Image (cartoon, rainbow, N blue to C red; front, side, top):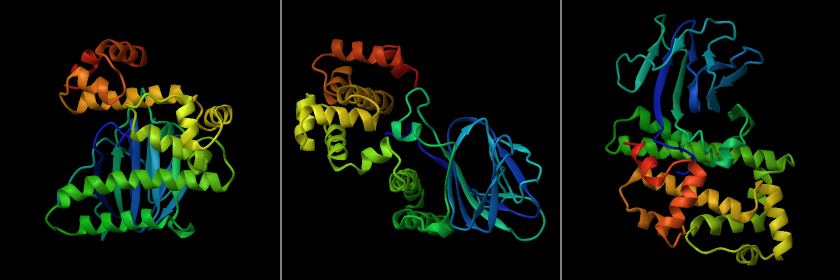
Length: 297
């Protein structure tokens, strides 16, 4: 998935008695799904905490850190990795009685130097309350995650990463859909605009094609000037600037993911020669493709 830089990590936390924890800051996005009970999301300055109830989904920029607690005033000891107790996927916090709250906690690694525009446009915290009607597809993903975590069926280790990718996708999509419903512009409007979303779909599906603005305008069934203006207004970049960004993002992912030769990577993202590709890559990342690949090893 182009929105993240590596696999998601996750663990359930069973929280007992008065409890609180502060998630250490850093790059990436934290996510929490309340499977049982309730919790409070506490921002770094402790102002305006958000109550979370069963079924709620929240996506948080790790940034300078944030807290989760049974009450906004509870102490928040720092945690980097939840200590395990019992089942290897279950962290137990507190010692008093049965768990009052069970939360699926985790994080997505991100390319903080080249964040996907959909991620860059998110607020510090995205809260999707179950009580206001979470998108049915997102609700299905949450239910499937709960079932996989509660069971011990063959293939669970493969199913959970795939479901976490869907959790990120549908959380982001649901938030942007709600923004569009409120008349917010930018990417929320771009994804709802049939012409622009169609152009984005074709551009992202075939980045190797020698696209021109006229080609994309034809796909969008708009005149060239109208398409170029609308695309730039909604996406925030001219069409071919966005195409270059997308190509370089895919190239960076391929260089980290496998050992394809530079000529193969160049061809896959629309460059006829290694030289042209390397020049564009260095302009985007500040280093050569080879140096970038070695940085992942």
